[in-house]
Length: 178
Image 1 (spheres, rainbow, N blue to C red):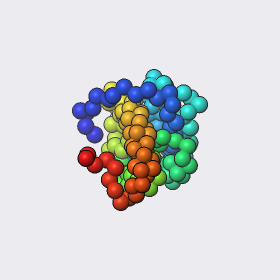
Image 2: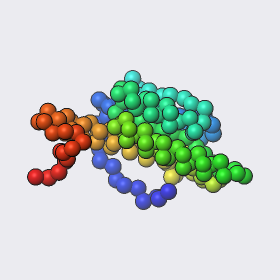
Image 3: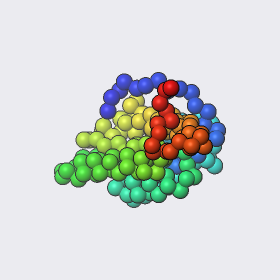
Image 4: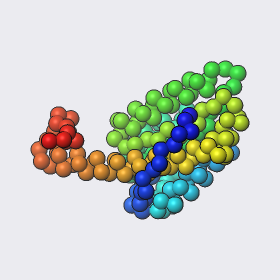
């Protein structure tokens, strides 16, 4: 993962509703991610009452709950948190690829952003650097969620306006510049 991080826009999260689906496997590392995510969300004004945390056994179970949570219509964004460390078999690669695709599919089908916060590494030390150390992926995942939740609201309003003006949602591009 790149260390060239984008500079985020300031977001007022006071009205945002977010969900976090967190895996139990590699729990200590997932909890470190979750702590950093929550600190960042609270720092942006998202209240504890507007954050739902859903616990699942492992990263492979995240996509189902992320999709169902997104489909509920109660959240502006869903953050998927898990940690997968390579072992002696290619299982970590299977989980990494399958969950990445499933989370993208969940986002597109539900029309709710789903942030892929599943950290996949070759070693435990790499995972610790990303979850507990200076690489701080938890903060990055939270900032991405804040940005995407804001985009969802803004773009949803534009789509609603276009539909009110008689444009078909999937036939006319309401974002095209006239």
